[in-house]
Length: 447
Image: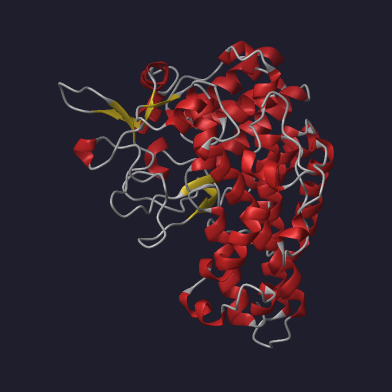
């Protein structure tokens, strides 16, 4: 954490807007003092979204850790770090692991600055409603960040105050998984009343918090709450709906469609880190991440993938290389990063209902997603059959998003599906540099 703090102190204000650069203080000065009025608060919250969408987080490496681990995406390049992921030989010095860990904690630390500074602002240009909205966004993004840390690493250090020196974040022991999840829920419940109940697909609103809560309660096996919060979005059909055909939410430069509950927007100057990794050289990309043969078969199966086959394409002979098409906007790099889509809410509710003994209702939700994909309706009738069908549906619905690996771990299916029987490999290693910098930080077993 010490290394992260040093980096954050030098770049906190660089992640906002150009206007904010003029007030960047010296490294020895309390950085929270720079957030003193409406304009600097707005710049800081914009910077918080940039943290969330950075290359280490949703812009690339955190997502890559998930889909390279999930068994459906192959690495075709020569770098050692992603090869360790696909070969399941991760070490504590893996660059992707270190990048993701650092990026998520930087997001948390910037949220902490906002949470400390914004309540003290007296600028009349920052209305009470807007002040609450900014605070709600910071709480919710901190909650999402800790949720993702838990999914990746288990219980973590809970850093909940603004950091002025590296010493502020050292000698803090890791909290348990339950304690860490409790903090996530606390932040979400704090955020909810502060936020406006409106639809904004690129910013956190109260509706975004409902979606995150649906996912949170699914992971906690709190089925009734998962069903309730998923329903809040699904029932808002005027604003959220399954895009038809499947490719409508991403093809032809689409962005912020009704399919999306929350996605991160990118610009020519703030690029999505995925933008040149998926397409083949013939299309100006590098094709170092690609669907593996098994996924290609599933997506091309009219009874499984349906029109989700539009996620992939094949180069012309003699190469005949399959590649992913979710991220394709070269050289602009403006592909959104999809954090939560309405399809996930349908599948969350389907699983919750299956667990609650509501098979007919669960099947209706599952088949809504299948109908959008143009595949035949499932006939699954029992709880076990429904859960297996939902698992497969997630596989072909979100193959290039941070979904399959975490859900196989969550459901206890990683051993059966991926053949990973060593439970110590169900979490990532904490970066070795962080272990060396903080004696209170303990490594995950097996690393």
